[in-house]
Length: 329
Image 1 (tube, rainbow, N blue to C red):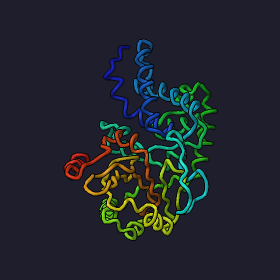
Image 2: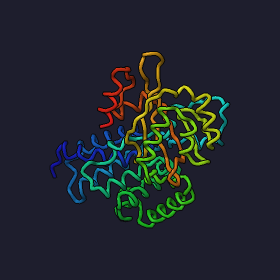
Image 3: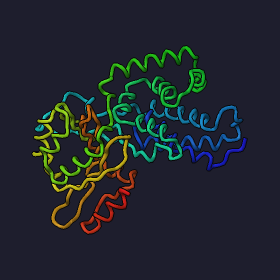
Image 4: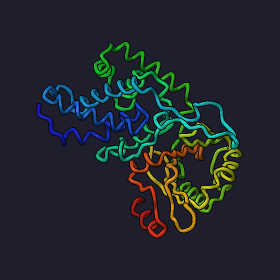
């Protein structure tokens, strides 16, 4: 059966989403998808059409991801590194490859999917869910994703993983039990209730750097994390003290909305001083709990992340308004 390169390329967003959910890294996911398409192209003459092209590609991508997990291990979050710290703790870094990364919605949500499927796919890339998946053994992880996100039957999963249907059903049972035991970690409501009101309040408070107004948008037990640092804080009091103390360099920042992980997300630029403009500082993803901010995740690896979101690293004072409008549109 003939397969051309355009037919393969049109599956890239869906495959990237699948690989991201397995690997927890947009960089690793893009590498895995590229390897998937290369393998598919080289073996296209062996595709006989007994399954759909999409299913065939997912099988290849799943095996690529399993190899990657075996070689690189899992990604994590600061909240899993140890107990909450204090505003006076030292900042200890881990390498970029240690951390779960945010992903642009545009890379993982196919534009040709129907609205219901798009909503489901955005939900399946929320940080809390992807982080919880990382705690599953790799084969459990992919079995659960193939079943619960892609809707595959146990027999299809068994064929993909070269195992038996009972083994697949057992893996699904164990995987779902593990996720259920981590229910508090996956209970992100994506701040869907009155989200636009919250966005406006968050942006207004940040641009005025009104710390009390920012903290008022959070739950009392909210967390703040800043990968690549292992330090994370919990509680509105600790976050208030951080923002007024060591985090006060964020005063004067410019922040605007981006689409990441199916959640409320923002690009933050800190002022360079004087008339020097602004420099990329963080890609912020907010997680919801009870209609308020439950977790403020500030990813500081802007040199890697901002280009993936199509964001510049530097903004001159006179270009910021027009650049802001062009990126946000």
